Structure formats: structure tokens, C-alpha cells
View 1 (spheres, rainbow, N blue to C red):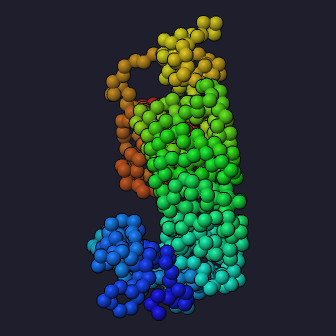
View 2: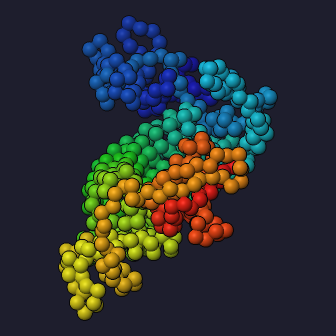
View 3: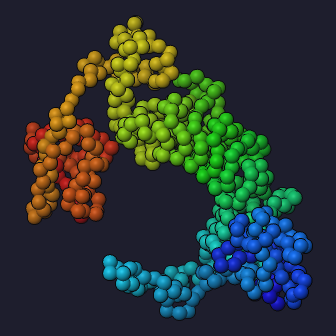
Length: 535
């Protein structure tokens, strides 16, 4: 009996099991010499979890992936899993006790004196009553619930939970695509499937499962240890697939998807080991791709070799969003390349060496100036006012280099070098729009720190009891940093709103409406008063 689950289903070779939070695969079921009863041979996912390689007294009973990942255990020592419907009932079924199944002893906060205070779970019963209407469930999260498959509960699952649209089956005991398909076959409205952190055995023909995934548009296969070709093979069973998430799989390369992924508009490759941009260009085979997530890889460059600077590339004609945080991008030429994309409008590039080349505010301005159609940068919207400011600042910043390279305020003599234009491909456009930078704008006068400080008053106009402060601040300090300073000075945790009153325009209050701008952008001067408000 200890080789059967609670629902009566039998444990088979290649099934998945768990013990004390560790997961493994059944590779042997049978007897061992000089012992009574049945043993289960388990190959653990963790290399050092077991004691041997599947051998006992010189005889090999199964083969492990690692020299010491094998164990022989009795069935009662293992958690053999439950079926999907049982897991849903356990998690979302109606609980009759006052706390609706919440273990209140586990809900507490620790005070400064290390004393535990029990937290009351207000509204738990009401939430449970709403969720317990299984036929109304649309989003179901069963992560880590030890689901092995559908078992003999397919009829109940189909009848009692017909409206499930999002299903998280990550980190369970599902051993194969056939088992996963059996569950999804009972959920005709399923559009979002998370099968991450499972060891899914690939079938000989994935199309055998395709009838079960007809409605799925979003598929998450994070940490399943597949290579790229296996992901493409899996995608064949999802005819309506629009989003594919394959993070944390150790991928070192990708290739052209061919006839696969033709309807995918979002591809998430975060936290793999991709390095070559040539491989990334292969993903141009996804004709409808709009969003490409490459965070936490090892990419060093971005280049579209088919197009010259100032022209558009044939690659990724529909790509709008690139998230490439925490990679190895160090050259500004990579940002120039992004301007070649026809519909590009959203960039995240934090955590790259290029961020170390200037202050965060300056880096943002340079990116905005270099990429003409950028609408969002580092998660923040790019306003028309900010773009204009960034482009004018760009003119002033690189104006001296432009002059040295052959640039001239007289259009008939304006002939900057190709080397300059390759580094600053949009500079000539700025000259046409805003005019050539004046020499006086480009002159750099050495300035001592004390000469760049202005003395201002800081006060809360809504509360006269709050102390007024007098501070000397650098004019290059951003509004964001000033807010942080005021929060520290007044020991305020809430959001602060800043404005100022100029001594030249008494009665006129001017808002600091852009946290990334320096104080001198707002023409604040010594003697002005800064208003700081908070709730």
C-alpha cells in the first residue's frame, strides 16, 4: 500500500517524488538482497542529496545523473503527490473554522524587544468564501503543492473548475508533457500556463498533446533545463502562443526558430548565459516579436550590420521593447544601433558598464538624445519637454568636438568628419532643428565648488511648527537627491512634494516637476525659498 497515493493511483518508474522539500525521480521499484518489502530507487535533482550512483552491493539497479544523487527508500519516507483537483480543493475549498484555514500561530511580527505579537487575519473567512466557489475560479496558483497529474479526477476538474484561465503548476511532481496535457485538457478556457521548475520528460511527438493546449497564449518554462531546440519543439503544441518565458535555463545560444514561434510577441530569456548578439539576431525569425527580455545575461554588444547609421535595419520590424538590464554593454555605439529599429520605443539598460560612464541623469539624457522614438527609458516615460532638453544639452555637450571635426555654424561650411558622425549620428539633425550651438554655450569655465553653491531656505508652508532650515546646496543637485536630503533632515518617511518661491517673483510658486533635473534647470537662485510638503 505504501506504493500507492492517497487517491489509489500507482507509483511508476519515472514518476516524481519529494522528501523534506527535495525533489527526485523514481528510477527503480523492487526488492533488494537480504531485505524485506519493496524499495524505491530515487535519483535526486541535487547532486549530493543521495549516497550512491544507483548501485547496491556491487550490483547496479539504476543509473543516476550524479555520482552521489541516488537513494533507496521505503515509500512511506516519500511524498508521492496528489492529483490536481485535490490540490485545488485543499487550497481553495471552503474551510469551516473561524480563521478559514489560516494558521494564525504562524502570523506574527517581532518587535524591537524580540517579543512576538500575533497578527489577526482580518477578512480571511470572507476571502475563503469567495475563493471556495470553485466554478468561479479564474486564477489558480498551485506552486509547490506536489501535484503529480490529474489522476482519476478529470471529470471533477472539468465539471467543477470550468473557468480557470491562469494556472500555476510550477515546482510540482509532474513528470512529463503527457501528464501536464491531461490536466490542461480539462480546462478549456486556460490561457496562461506556468510549468516552471518541473522535470518534464519530452515526448516522442509533442503534437500528441496539442489538443490540450489549444487556448494557451502564455507559457512559462523557467528552470526546466531544456536547450533551445527543445523549447521550440514544445512550442509546436501551442498553436495560439503569444508569450514564451524560458528564464534560468542556462541557455548559451539560440538559433532561428524557423516555423516555430510565429505568433509570439513577447520572448523572455532572462537569467540565461547568452553572450553573442549574432545569436540574438537569429530571433528575427519571430516575425511578430514586440518585446524582448534579455536581463541578466552576458551580452556585450548590440549591432545591426545590415544598416548604416541613420538608416533603419530589416531586423525586428515590430520590436518595441528591449529590456537588457545587468549585461555587459559598455559602448555608446550600442545605443546608436538601437535607433536603427523601426518601431523601438522602450529601453531598460540598468546594471551595465555603460551606466558607469556618467551620472544616472546624464546617462538617461544621452540615451534619449541618441534614440529618436524612445517613449520610455528605465521604466519612466519620456516627455516632449524632457526630449527637447536632452537634445539641446547634447548639442552643447558635444559641440566642441563637432567644431573640431569640421562642423560649422555656416551651413555651406558645415562638414563634420565621418568619425564624429559615426559616434553622434543624430547631431546634424539637432543642428537643423535647434540651430548650431553658439560658442558661448560651449565654453567651459573652470568653477570652484564653493562658487556653485547657493544658499536657500527650506520650510513646510502648511505647518509653522516645523523648523525652517537654511542650507547651501550645489546647483547641480537633482530634485530627487534634494527630496532624499529633506527626508533625512526632517526624518520623514512619506512622499515629499517640492516647489519654490523666487525672490524675483514674490507670490509665484514654481513646482519642481521633474525629479531627474538639477536645481539650476529651474533657475533657482540664492535667497529663494523651497517649500517641502508631506502628509
